[in-house]
Amino acid sequence: MYTGYIRLTGTSDEINEQMQGIDFSALYPNQYIILSNSETGKDSELRFDGEKLVELKLPSSGYLKGKNSLQRCALDLMMNRDIDIVAVLGTYGSGKSYLTTQMALYHVLEKGHQSKVLGIREPTGEGTPVGYLKGTFEDKVRNFFLPIEQQLKGGEFELEALRQRGVLDTNIPYYMKGTTYDNTIMLVDEAEDLSEAQIRLVGTRLGKNSRIFLSGDYGQSLIDRTANNPLVKMCNELRGNESFGCIYLDEDVRSNASKAFAEMFK
Image 1 (cartoon, rainbow, N blue to C red):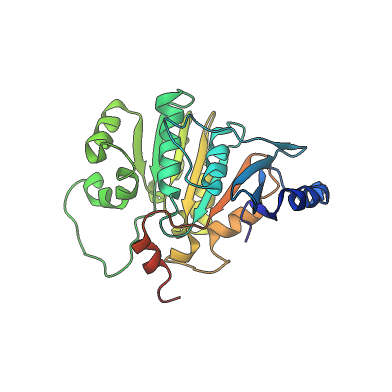
Image 2 (cartoon, one colour):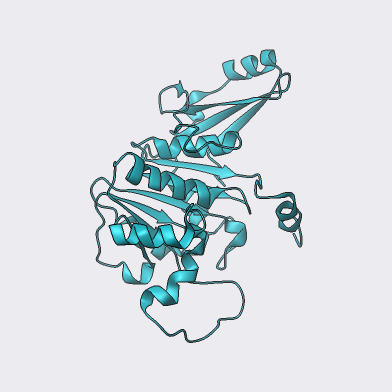
């Protein structure tokens, strides 16, 4: 699986030696090198832009700050407006939904780079279906977008306010055929539950000045929990494309209790 980074670990001298031996022709555009210094206990990150290694570009720490090196790499991908397709994969509690939601709002509300956020999710869930649900379309699918709602500081009230302002909308792949979204950040949550056809469908909806942020964990997929998961296959196929970037977050930052459950039944 393409994780979007390689890690070099050692003392300062050892890292320098490893850096001198890197074959840059073997790196993919927007792949990261994470330097883990065993002397200082600190990490630093560089992105390969296709020609050279460059420093990360991050949002103001007052708006959003990465909790570890991989989160900082994810923020850098989404900050770079030349990267239209960003996949933030990760394990339970790694912060993938939070980061993608906050960065989508950053580009729309803070910077005005796009005019709208479109939340997209396939309405499938773990367990037994609850059967018929009365109400409007929004009523029927609202709970599927709770992961996005929970990333908003004002919760459901902020979600509704953003809807009223026309800067946030939600949809499911079933209703997206034939549509085009210009000036939009498409925010695809739980993307591990999309089929290959659905990923292609959603991705081909991108119009002018639009970007797509996908987040997901193939280990939690309801369709395929192996490296053959369509989201993983998408990352493997798009690596090398200068408009694409991927990063895999492998640390649960939610809580120690969350970590304990994440390791169960493997």
